[in-house]
Image (cartoon, rainbow, N blue to C red; front, top):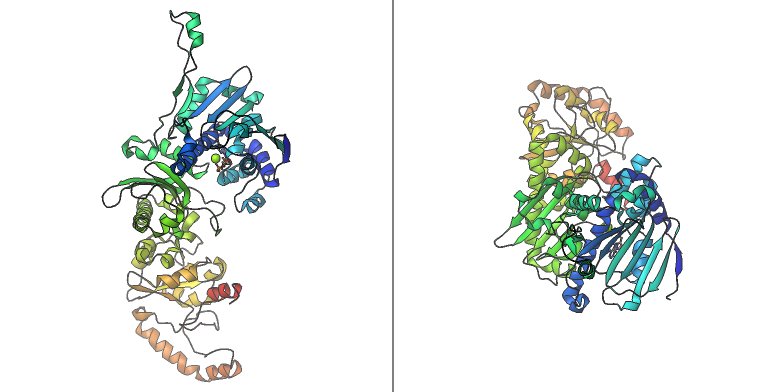
Length: 568
Ligand code: ADP
Ligand code: MG
């Protein structure tokens, strides 16, 4: 099995690689951030595994990342003494893309480079970004705990194939060797590399080292100088970013840290960094992304926070600390209360988990509320991305219903546009004297909602109606029930009581209509017998001759369709 094997890339990996090389070219230098980010993850994983298996660290306990270059060879090397990879892991991790939804993502690609570059950033590309600057990439690696004869060498020329062979490899960890393309030789340069590390990787918690700059020649003899082993120095700050005081962290640093933990290529929209002491002792750093991940509505998509216990990495995607309707939030939680040997199962039962979850939920809702008050445009952007997810909130999180309600935005008959930009507070502030309910209409799409015959009387009387056209809406109002003491009322349901907003004249007119149309109602009732529950005369229509109304207790048409689809 030592022999060299060639493998073809998984189709998706091949496509991604191709796109990578062509569409992210304008932002070449990010390859270094990605490789350093992987090396740092590898150190985290080793620390974690060594909690239960201390021998893994052996006598090589100072975890670090090293960056070296050779100008003559045109190579750049990124090495770490982290967890490393076995032969199988190399094939699995560097030859395939294991994320769920990958092929769905691939189908969205358009062939338009700019659009695709954006999409690809959203997907996160990681290791393959090496091929932006290299035409050949070699990876030497050895899994912690395996012997020196279990090293692996992986090599790829950025085309359809890669090769793997088992080799002798003295050190634990991974060494990535980039053979730079002619037009990327600029990266074999100390100053350039140092500034890129500073820019993107300063927050990495372990040292990112480079060879010490040669001191100018001293009196020391030539012989002495040759004997000295090469000396490395840290180029980054090498302190976990969230452990630093807020006042000392620059927003650029927060942004780069976000990219490290989220695999997003774009800056986040906002973040909130907090140290909590007392009954609970933890630090959280929570981010709201500036775009939706491609798998936001995929049930099995990874979500949650990166969990650390006393600064030791424990797991990615700890989903126990935020509710599902805040699944778009990214970030880090570092707890001092949880045990180091915490697992997903233990988390589910630990009473610290619920306390932290409820605190973090409030933290996020407050962060959103603050943004809504401070910067309407930014908040609108957030709503357009994640509004539909937030609308799952009232059903999932009863205790925060009020807070969530304030964050919701709707389209309404006031502006009669599709833009969801009206808050419930705005609506209530505009309610007519005597109006008791918050009126809404549900429909499959905006055009249908807007031209609903049920709206006629409301338009005539100048009463605003919310236009609900998202899949989740009917379900959501069902759980909302009321806001600020006002019931939600479906305009298509039951008898219409406009409350005191109805004038005496209106009531008199209604009486008159009922009397005059008695005979007609009876005839229609006879014709439709069995197909409808009852026929009524109404003043709720202005231009349309008739409409169907669902009784108060019945499901609305959207809800009915959802259940039908689910086979109920
Ligand atoms: P991601 O970091 O988002 O998982 P990458 O494409 O950057 O995706 O890396 C793919 C996988 O390859 C990683 O998840 C990891 O398992 C493995 N890997 C990459 N670099 C290293 C490294 N330096 N040490 C150990 N494993 C690595
Ligand atoms: Mg990565």
